[in-house]
Amino acid sequence: MQAKWFFIDSNAELQATAARFLESWHTNAPFQIKSSGTTGLPQLHTFNQTQLTHSAQASNTAFELTTHSRALLCLPLSSVGGLMLLARSIVGDFELLLQLPSARPLQNLRQKIDFVAMVPTQLQQSLEHDLPQLKGIAKILVGGGQLSSELIAACQSAQLEVWQSYGMTETLSHVALRKVSPIEASFYSAMPGIHFSNKNDCLVIHYPALQSEELVTKDIVELHNPTTFTWIGRSDNAINSGGFKVIPEILEAQLDKYLGAAFFIASLPDAKWGQIVAIAIEGNEKPVFPDFQSLGLKAAEIPRKYALVPHFERTETQKIKRQEILQSLSNADWRPL
Image 1 (spheres, one colour):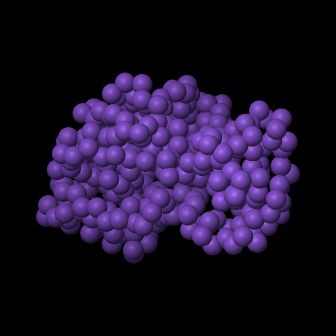
Image 2: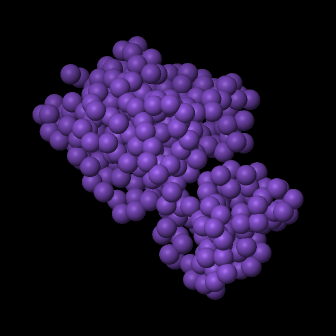
């Protein structure tokens, strides 16, 4: 099978990586993909061509990608998102444009595109700087992080068709999708052949076509039925402050429009409360914080300290490396609010 791949960037490493993938595909060799490591040490996962083909066919059906389609690959080929787009193009026999990952992947785009997969940073930059090119894309898939309410509103205002994915390296990209624009769905819906359960409020994935054993995640969800759920946050990020559970992701969504810089919610040990809420902020200057009490936050949710971090360390897909950042900070870096 001849891959219909065209390189926007004449980068030798990009072309060599794609060629190695194609060689593995033709020889039916195993594929090894390393997880991002945002929630722990990166792990190497091995899959076969049958598993990649099954996942690719499901995605192609969901996004109506056919032999007449054209897609843009602007994610790292080392990530599951980038690798699976290679697989989708082979299985679907559609045209794929490849370029090096950048914050503005559409900046020099001249061709009409039917599909693109992005991370939130790329979507935000494209909305701000390359809106005409973005509006010319039929379907946009976003993964690698949750979308803020402001970013979703901007997509809706531009009348873009945007889908948010839920998945991980272990599941070969997405196992569920949520449409966020032009009309936002409140929950994720499973891909065909996949169903969910929960264990200790965390999502359990049942994906028989990919693996025989269930996959227990650390994602706190509200399970509506075996095929739909609302994502709430990560159990390994949860903060117990005086017996009250604070979910950082929920609090981040509440505070996002009040802080002009990138930030994330963290916990710090406290003699009285056990843990308290703190904010790590990217930048060198203290922002103007809102009056937290006026926002209707519970006492345990109100941030008590903050730290300035000149530059957040991120993965190739622009996920903030929370644990590495927190480990680099000392007690002296945290200032009272």
